[in-house]
Length: 109
Image 1: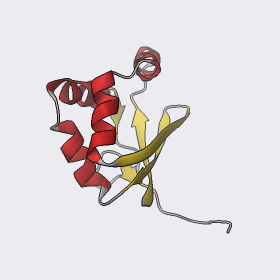
Image 2: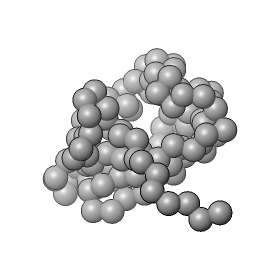
Image 3: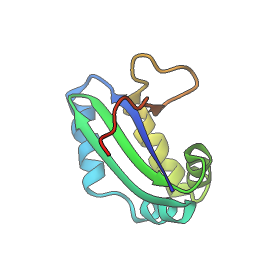
Image 4: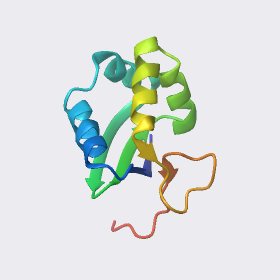
């Protein structure tokens, strides 16, 4: 299993930030089932201001996992489009990255 840390920003609109948080208090069941089914072992999203940081634990390439997830069900595709409409790539993201991998700097072992 591999851990990935990714970042994206929410758009600079308090209504969008509030909507994003509200949606994540009630994640659609199809989305949760799809994430598990695609091979995701764990996921956490943290927020600071408009910056979102997602920590994933997955078997294999997280990009393929999310492609499988997004194609798994029409409701999942709808959710992903809705979430993306609220987001924008973080500064320094290289196109076509959306959720951008963060570079490890330090790890205490």
